[in-house]
Length: 207
Image 1 (cartoon, rainbow, N blue to C red):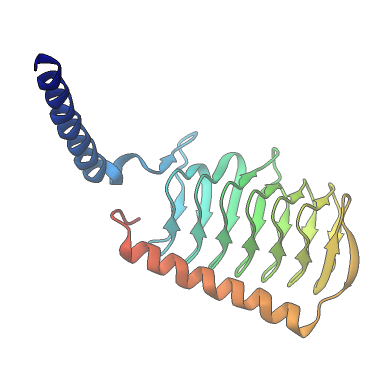
Image 2: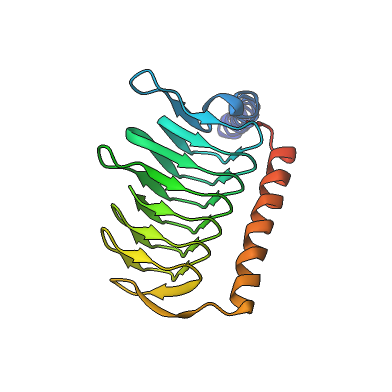
């Protein structure tokens, strides 16, 4: 009898603590699920229409334009040189964006940055797509509308021309993009703009 009583008491308090924990999580989601830090008196400048997913970290001299989206577990550090991100850019989950001294990272409008991409002091021209798991290093330039295939390495100083598919380690031009390729890239861009809007509307915390 005593053993059963203890069991029921334990279950009772377990339910109470679980309920309180859920209420506290819902109450404080706005505070701790993403982090924005100033660095050296410079604070990130983020447009009001930007969507920041949970567990993103943004520090220092970072500018993010209208309707862009930064997805789960991405880190953007502006503590060495500026990072400039245009409008309607989607930086997908677990990306890392950083710079070398005096060499900013520039991402122009309508760019797609796939999951787990690393960008370091590079220039990505508008409407380009950087495939999942790729690395683009210092001084590299990705041309307008270019497509970098998944898992590629664009070495320092390398220029990828506009409108081509490049792939490999190191990345080399494979072919010109087809109209179907371009349509797919446009579809992805538009889907992420809409997806980010929906997340902002339905999330318990808004930017």
